[in-house]
Image 1: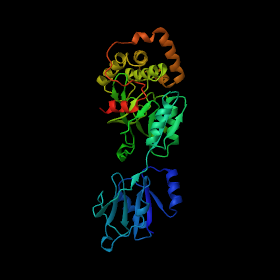
Image 2: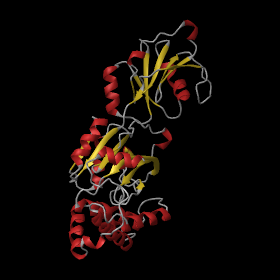
Image 3: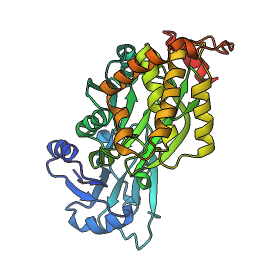
Image 4: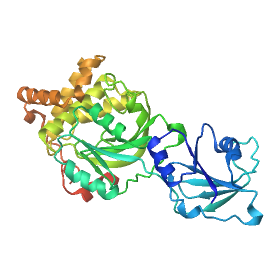
Length: 377
Protein backbone atom coordinates (compact mmCIF):
# COMPACT_ATOMS: atom_id res chain seq x y z
CA UNK A 1 0.00 0.00 0.00
CA UNK A 2 1.41 3.36 -1.01
CA UNK A 3 1.27 6.40 1.25
CA UNK A 4 -1.61 8.79 0.72
CA UNK A 5 -1.23 12.52 1.25
CA UNK A 6 -4.45 14.49 1.05
CA UNK A 7 -4.27 18.22 0.45
CA UNK A 8 -6.69 21.11 0.81
CA UNK A 9 -6.93 24.83 0.17
CA UNK A 10 -9.21 25.53 3.12
CA UNK A 11 -9.42 23.12 6.01
CA UNK A 12 -12.70 21.25 6.47
CA UNK A 13 -12.64 19.30 9.74
CA UNK A 14 -15.69 17.20 8.82
CA UNK A 15 -14.15 15.97 5.55
CA UNK A 16 -10.76 15.33 7.16
CA UNK A 17 -12.37 13.33 9.98
CA UNK A 18 -14.19 11.18 7.44
CA UNK A 19 -11.03 10.52 5.41
CA UNK A 20 -8.98 9.83 8.56
CA UNK A 21 -11.44 7.11 9.49
CA UNK A 22 -11.19 5.53 6.04
CA UNK A 23 -7.40 5.92 5.75
CA UNK A 24 -5.91 5.95 9.29
CA UNK A 25 -2.32 6.35 8.04
CA UNK A 26 -3.00 9.19 5.60
CA UNK A 27 -1.40 12.62 6.04
CA UNK A 28 -3.05 15.98 5.43
CA UNK A 29 -1.33 19.08 4.07
CA UNK A 30 -2.44 22.56 3.13
CA UNK A 31 -1.68 23.60 -0.45
CA UNK A 32 -0.66 27.25 -0.25
CA UNK A 33 0.57 27.78 -3.79
CA UNK A 34 0.78 25.06 -6.46
CA UNK A 35 1.18 21.29 -6.79
CA UNK A 36 4.93 21.40 -7.50
CA UNK A 37 5.60 23.39 -4.36
CA UNK A 38 3.44 20.98 -2.37
CA UNK A 39 5.25 17.92 -3.76
CA UNK A 40 8.65 19.40 -2.90
CA UNK A 41 7.39 20.04 0.61
CA UNK A 42 5.86 16.63 1.38
CA UNK A 43 7.86 14.03 -0.59
CA UNK A 44 10.40 13.59 2.21
CA UNK A 45 7.62 12.55 4.60
CA UNK A 46 6.61 9.53 2.50
CA UNK A 47 7.73 6.14 3.79
CA UNK A 48 6.97 4.36 0.49
CA UNK A 49 8.73 4.68 -2.85
CA UNK A 50 5.63 6.22 -4.37
CA UNK A 51 2.86 8.22 -2.77
CA UNK A 52 -0.59 9.44 -3.76
CA UNK A 53 -1.41 13.14 -3.71
CA UNK A 54 -5.17 13.67 -3.63
CA UNK A 55 -7.41 16.70 -3.17
CA UNK A 56 -9.72 16.08 -0.18
CA UNK A 57 -12.70 17.10 -2.30
CA UNK A 58 -12.18 14.42 -4.93
CA UNK A 59 -13.99 11.08 -4.91
CA UNK A 60 -13.93 7.96 -7.08
CA UNK A 61 -10.27 7.03 -6.70
CA UNK A 62 -10.63 3.84 -4.63
CA UNK A 63 -10.04 1.42 -7.50
CA UNK A 64 -6.92 3.33 -8.56
CA UNK A 65 -5.08 2.93 -5.24
CA UNK A 66 -3.82 -0.54 -6.21
CA UNK A 67 -2.32 0.72 -9.47
CA UNK A 68 1.15 -0.76 -10.18
CA UNK A 69 3.77 1.32 -11.95
CA UNK A 70 5.72 -0.39 -14.73
CA UNK A 71 9.51 -0.53 -14.29
CA UNK A 72 10.14 1.82 -17.20
CA UNK A 73 7.72 4.44 -15.78
CA UNK A 74 9.06 4.69 -12.26
CA UNK A 75 10.72 8.07 -12.69
CA UNK A 76 7.68 9.98 -13.93
CA UNK A 77 4.65 11.43 -12.17
CA UNK A 78 1.45 9.61 -13.06
CA UNK A 79 -1.56 11.90 -13.42
CA UNK A 80 -4.95 10.22 -13.40
CA UNK A 81 -7.27 12.68 -15.07
CA UNK A 82 -11.02 12.86 -15.72
CA UNK A 83 -12.97 15.69 -17.28
CA UNK A 84 -13.23 17.58 -13.99
CA UNK A 85 -10.61 16.17 -11.60
CA UNK A 86 -7.15 14.68 -11.31
CA UNK A 87 -4.97 12.91 -8.73
CA UNK A 88 -1.23 12.19 -8.69
CA UNK A 89 0.96 9.16 -8.09
CA UNK A 90 4.44 10.49 -7.40
CA UNK A 91 7.89 8.86 -7.05
CA UNK A 92 9.41 9.74 -3.68
CA UNK A 93 12.73 10.68 -5.31
CA UNK A 94 11.19 12.86 -8.03
CA UNK A 95 12.90 16.16 -8.84
CA UNK A 96 10.43 18.72 -10.17
CA UNK A 97 12.76 21.69 -9.97
CA UNK A 98 11.34 25.17 -9.54
CA UNK A 99 8.66 25.03 -12.23
CA UNK A 100 5.07 25.74 -11.21
CA UNK A 101 3.75 22.84 -13.29
CA UNK A 102 4.66 19.15 -13.56
CA UNK A 103 6.57 18.60 -16.80
CA UNK A 104 7.76 14.96 -16.59
CA UNK A 105 4.45 13.18 -16.33
CA UNK A 106 2.30 10.43 -17.76
CA UNK A 107 -1.39 11.31 -18.08
CA UNK A 108 -3.88 8.47 -17.77
CA UNK A 109 -7.50 9.19 -18.67
CA UNK A 110 -10.10 7.85 -16.28
CA UNK A 111 -13.84 8.38 -15.99
CA UNK A 112 -14.58 7.80 -12.33
CA UNK A 113 -12.82 10.78 -10.70
CA UNK A 114 -15.20 13.53 -9.63
CA UNK A 115 -15.11 16.45 -7.25
CA UNK A 116 -17.32 16.18 -4.22
CA UNK A 117 -20.48 18.11 -5.02
CA UNK A 118 -21.12 21.42 -3.33
CA UNK A 119 -24.01 21.28 -0.87
CA UNK A 120 -27.42 22.34 -2.21
CA UNK A 121 -29.89 24.31 -0.10
CA UNK A 122 -33.52 25.01 -0.94
CA UNK A 123 -34.85 28.06 0.94
CA UNK A 124 -38.56 28.44 1.57
CA UNK A 125 -40.81 30.46 3.87
CA UNK A 126 -44.48 30.48 2.87
CA UNK A 127 -44.40 29.94 -0.90
CA UNK A 128 -47.25 27.74 -2.17
CA UNK A 129 -45.14 26.31 -4.98
CA UNK A 130 -42.27 25.31 -2.68
CA UNK A 131 -43.16 21.63 -2.21
CA UNK A 132 -43.50 21.05 -5.95
CA UNK A 133 -40.23 22.78 -6.78
CA UNK A 134 -38.40 20.96 -3.98
CA UNK A 135 -39.65 17.59 -5.20
CA UNK A 136 -38.56 18.44 -8.72
CA UNK A 137 -35.13 19.63 -7.51
CA UNK A 138 -34.57 16.43 -5.53
CA UNK A 139 -34.90 14.45 -8.73
CA UNK A 140 -31.65 16.14 -9.78
CA UNK A 141 -30.02 16.39 -6.36
CA UNK A 142 -31.54 13.95 -3.84
CA UNK A 143 -29.14 15.29 -1.17
CA UNK A 144 -30.73 18.77 -1.22
CA UNK A 145 -31.14 20.27 2.25
CA UNK A 146 -34.28 22.25 3.04
CA UNK A 147 -34.11 25.49 5.04
CA UNK A 148 -37.73 26.15 5.90
CA UNK A 149 -39.56 28.91 7.77
CA UNK A 150 -36.51 30.85 8.96
CA UNK A 151 -37.52 34.47 9.51
CA UNK A 152 -35.34 36.94 7.66
CA UNK A 153 -33.62 36.26 4.37
CA UNK A 154 -30.15 36.83 5.80
CA UNK A 155 -30.90 34.37 8.62
CA UNK A 156 -31.99 31.73 6.10
CA UNK A 157 -28.72 32.10 4.20
CA UNK A 158 -26.79 32.05 7.47
CA UNK A 159 -28.52 28.81 8.48
CA UNK A 160 -27.47 27.27 5.16
CA UNK A 161 -23.86 28.45 5.57
CA UNK A 162 -23.69 26.94 9.06
CA UNK A 163 -24.98 23.59 7.80
CA UNK A 164 -22.79 23.48 4.70
CA UNK A 165 -19.95 20.98 4.74
CA UNK A 166 -18.44 22.49 1.57
CA UNK A 167 -16.63 25.79 1.08
CA UNK A 168 -19.24 26.87 -1.46
CA UNK A 169 -22.93 26.04 -1.42
CA UNK A 170 -25.79 26.30 -3.89
CA UNK A 171 -28.89 28.33 -3.00
CA UNK A 172 -32.20 27.76 -4.77
CA UNK A 173 -35.19 29.91 -3.86
CA UNK A 174 -38.56 28.28 -3.25
CA UNK A 175 -40.11 29.82 -6.36
CA UNK A 176 -37.35 28.58 -8.67
CA UNK A 177 -38.26 25.77 -11.06
CA UNK A 178 -34.86 24.41 -12.07
CA UNK A 179 -34.34 23.61 -15.73
CA UNK A 180 -33.63 20.03 -16.76
CA UNK A 181 -30.53 21.27 -18.53
CA UNK A 182 -28.95 22.90 -15.48
CA UNK A 183 -25.78 21.19 -14.27
CA UNK A 184 -24.76 21.28 -10.60
CA UNK A 185 -21.28 19.99 -11.41
CA UNK A 186 -19.73 23.45 -11.84
CA UNK A 187 -16.40 23.73 -10.03
CA UNK A 188 -15.19 27.10 -8.75
CA UNK A 189 -11.63 27.94 -9.88
CA UNK A 190 -9.28 28.52 -6.96
CA UNK A 191 -8.89 32.20 -7.91
CA UNK A 192 -12.67 32.74 -7.47
CA UNK A 193 -12.68 31.89 -3.75
CA UNK A 194 -14.48 35.17 -2.89
CA UNK A 195 -16.89 35.26 -5.84
CA UNK A 196 -20.65 34.79 -5.74
CA UNK A 197 -21.70 33.06 -8.95
CA UNK A 198 -25.21 33.94 -10.12
CA UNK A 199 -27.05 32.20 -12.94
CA UNK A 200 -29.89 33.88 -14.83
CA UNK A 201 -33.58 33.15 -14.47
CA UNK A 202 -36.61 33.90 -16.64
CA UNK A 203 -39.30 36.15 -15.18
CA UNK A 204 -42.55 35.02 -16.81
CA UNK A 205 -44.43 38.20 -15.89
CA UNK A 206 -42.29 40.79 -17.69
CA UNK A 207 -39.98 38.37 -19.58
CA UNK A 208 -36.77 39.80 -18.11
CA UNK A 209 -33.77 37.46 -18.09
CA UNK A 210 -31.07 38.29 -15.54
CA UNK A 211 -29.75 37.24 -12.16
CA UNK A 212 -32.90 38.04 -10.20
CA UNK A 213 -34.25 34.79 -8.73
CA UNK A 214 -31.52 32.72 -10.36
CA UNK A 215 -29.54 29.90 -8.77
CA UNK A 216 -26.54 31.09 -6.75
CA UNK A 217 -23.26 29.51 -5.71
CA UNK A 218 -22.02 31.29 -2.58
CA UNK A 219 -18.71 31.17 -0.67
CA UNK A 220 -19.58 29.96 2.82
CA UNK A 221 -17.03 32.16 4.59
CA UNK A 222 -18.56 35.34 3.17
CA UNK A 223 -21.97 34.59 4.68
CA UNK A 224 -20.51 33.52 8.02
CA UNK A 225 -18.53 36.77 8.26
CA UNK A 226 -21.14 39.12 6.79
CA UNK A 227 -22.65 42.06 8.65
CA UNK A 228 -26.41 41.56 8.61
CA UNK A 229 -27.07 45.29 9.00
CA UNK A 230 -25.34 46.11 5.70
CA UNK A 231 -26.36 43.05 3.70
CA UNK A 232 -29.56 44.43 2.17
CA UNK A 233 -29.02 42.31 -0.90
CA UNK A 234 -27.63 39.00 0.35
CA UNK A 235 -25.63 37.99 -2.67
CA UNK A 236 -24.21 41.33 -3.81
CA UNK A 237 -23.66 43.22 -0.57
CA UNK A 238 -21.53 40.83 1.50
CA UNK A 239 -18.15 42.01 0.30
CA UNK A 240 -17.97 39.52 -2.54
CA UNK A 241 -17.17 39.85 -6.19
CA UNK A 242 -20.00 38.91 -8.53
CA UNK A 243 -19.85 36.71 -11.60
CA UNK A 244 -23.01 36.55 -13.70
CA UNK A 245 -23.10 33.26 -15.55
CA UNK A 246 -24.45 33.46 -19.09
CA UNK A 247 -26.86 30.57 -18.71
CA UNK A 248 -30.49 30.34 -17.66
CA UNK A 249 -30.83 28.12 -14.61
CA UNK A 250 -34.53 28.27 -13.79
CA UNK A 251 -37.99 29.69 -14.25
CA UNK A 252 -38.74 32.27 -11.57
CA UNK A 253 -42.31 31.32 -10.62
CA UNK A 254 -42.69 33.92 -7.88
CA UNK A 255 -46.20 35.09 -8.81
CA UNK A 256 -48.09 32.31 -7.04
CA UNK A 257 -50.29 34.49 -4.81
CA UNK A 258 -51.08 38.21 -4.58
CA UNK A 259 -48.74 38.60 -1.60
CA UNK A 260 -45.86 36.68 -3.17
CA UNK A 261 -46.22 38.54 -6.46
CA UNK A 262 -46.30 41.97 -4.80
CA UNK A 263 -43.58 41.19 -2.26
CA UNK A 264 -41.10 39.83 -4.79
CA UNK A 265 -41.50 42.79 -7.11
CA UNK A 266 -41.32 45.28 -4.23
CA UNK A 267 -38.06 43.84 -2.85
CA UNK A 268 -36.34 43.72 -6.22
CA UNK A 269 -37.37 47.23 -7.22
CA UNK A 270 -36.28 48.66 -3.87
CA UNK A 271 -32.82 47.25 -4.54
CA UNK A 272 -32.75 48.51 -8.10
CA UNK A 273 -34.03 52.00 -7.25
CA UNK A 274 -31.85 52.49 -4.16
CA UNK A 275 -28.61 51.38 -5.80
CA UNK A 276 -27.72 48.86 -3.06
CA UNK A 277 -26.70 46.24 -5.60
CA UNK A 278 -22.94 46.60 -5.79
CA UNK A 279 -21.42 47.45 -9.18
CA UNK A 280 -24.77 47.69 -10.92
CA UNK A 281 -24.81 49.32 -14.36
CA UNK A 282 -27.24 52.24 -14.28
CA UNK A 283 -28.53 51.81 -17.83
CA UNK A 284 -29.37 48.16 -17.13
CA UNK A 285 -30.98 49.13 -13.83
CA UNK A 286 -33.17 51.75 -15.51
CA UNK A 287 -34.28 49.28 -18.19
CA UNK A 288 -35.16 46.66 -15.59
CA UNK A 289 -37.09 49.11 -13.43
CA UNK A 290 -39.08 50.20 -16.47
CA UNK A 291 -39.91 46.59 -17.34
CA UNK A 292 -40.97 45.76 -13.78
CA UNK A 293 -43.25 48.80 -13.49
CA UNK A 294 -44.76 48.80 -17.00
CA UNK A 295 -44.98 45.25 -18.35
CA UNK A 296 -46.99 42.12 -17.59
CA UNK A 297 -50.11 43.66 -16.06
CA UNK A 298 -52.32 41.36 -18.16
CA UNK A 299 -50.60 38.18 -16.97
CA UNK A 300 -51.85 36.10 -14.02
CA UNK A 301 -51.21 38.22 -10.89
CA UNK A 302 -49.29 40.68 -13.05
CA UNK A 303 -51.24 43.59 -11.59
CA UNK A 304 -49.81 42.74 -8.16
CA UNK A 305 -46.34 42.53 -9.64
CA UNK A 306 -46.66 45.96 -11.24
CA UNK A 307 -48.14 47.39 -8.04
CA UNK A 308 -45.33 46.02 -5.92
CA UNK A 309 -42.75 47.23 -8.42
CA UNK A 310 -44.18 50.74 -8.38
CA UNK A 311 -44.21 50.82 -4.57
CA UNK A 312 -40.69 49.39 -4.45
CA UNK A 313 -39.33 51.99 -6.86
CA UNK A 314 -40.80 54.79 -4.73
CA UNK A 315 -39.49 53.28 -1.48
CA UNK A 316 -36.01 52.66 -2.89
CA UNK A 317 -35.65 56.21 -4.21
CA UNK A 318 -37.12 57.74 -1.08
CA UNK A 319 -34.90 55.86 1.37
CA UNK A 320 -31.77 55.62 -0.73
CA UNK A 321 -28.76 55.56 1.61
CA UNK A 322 -30.87 54.76 4.71
CA UNK A 323 -29.50 51.34 5.70
CA UNK A 324 -32.06 50.75 8.44
CA UNK A 325 -35.02 51.52 6.18
CA UNK A 326 -33.63 49.44 3.32
CA UNK A 327 -32.91 46.48 5.60
CA UNK A 328 -36.65 46.21 6.28
CA UNK A 329 -37.18 44.55 2.88
CA UNK A 330 -35.77 41.34 4.39
CA UNK A 331 -38.47 41.28 7.10
CA UNK A 332 -41.44 39.26 5.80
CA UNK A 333 -43.81 40.43 8.55
CA UNK A 334 -43.12 44.07 7.67
CA UNK A 335 -43.53 43.29 3.97
CA UNK A 336 -46.96 41.78 4.57
CA UNK A 337 -48.02 44.96 6.39
CA UNK A 338 -46.81 47.09 3.49
CA UNK A 339 -48.66 44.91 1.01
CA UNK A 340 -51.95 45.19 2.86
CA UNK A 341 -51.61 48.95 3.23
CA UNK A 342 -50.65 49.46 -0.41
CA UNK A 343 -53.50 47.53 -2.03
CA UNK A 344 -55.99 49.54 0.05
CA UNK A 345 -54.58 52.83 -1.25
CA UNK A 346 -53.82 51.57 -4.76
CA UNK A 347 -56.19 48.76 -5.80
CA UNK A 348 -54.53 46.14 -8.02
CA UNK A 349 -56.94 46.96 -10.87
CA UNK A 350 -55.03 50.21 -11.35
CA UNK A 351 -52.07 48.21 -12.65
CA UNK A 352 -53.85 46.07 -15.22
CA UNK A 353 -52.95 46.63 -18.86
CA UNK A 354 -54.26 45.43 -22.19
CA UNK A 355 -51.07 44.54 -24.07
CA UNK A 356 -51.15 41.12 -25.65
CA UNK A 357 -49.40 38.25 -23.94
CA UNK A 358 -46.51 37.01 -26.07
CA UNK A 359 -46.21 33.68 -24.30
CA UNK A 360 -48.64 30.84 -23.71
CA UNK A 361 -47.01 30.01 -20.40
CA UNK A 362 -48.53 31.53 -17.27
CA UNK A 363 -46.34 32.83 -14.47
CA UNK A 364 -47.75 30.31 -12.02
CA UNK A 365 -48.19 27.45 -14.47
CA UNK A 366 -47.91 23.80 -13.51
CA UNK A 367 -46.58 22.99 -16.99
CA UNK A 368 -42.92 22.88 -16.01
CA UNK A 369 -41.77 21.35 -19.29
CA UNK A 370 -43.55 24.04 -21.28
CA UNK A 371 -41.96 26.73 -19.16
CA UNK A 372 -38.52 25.25 -19.67
CA UNK A 373 -39.02 25.20 -23.41
CA UNK A 374 -39.85 28.91 -23.28
CA UNK A 375 -36.79 29.73 -21.20
CA UNK A 376 -34.37 27.96 -23.50
CA UNK A 377 -35.89 29.04 -26.79
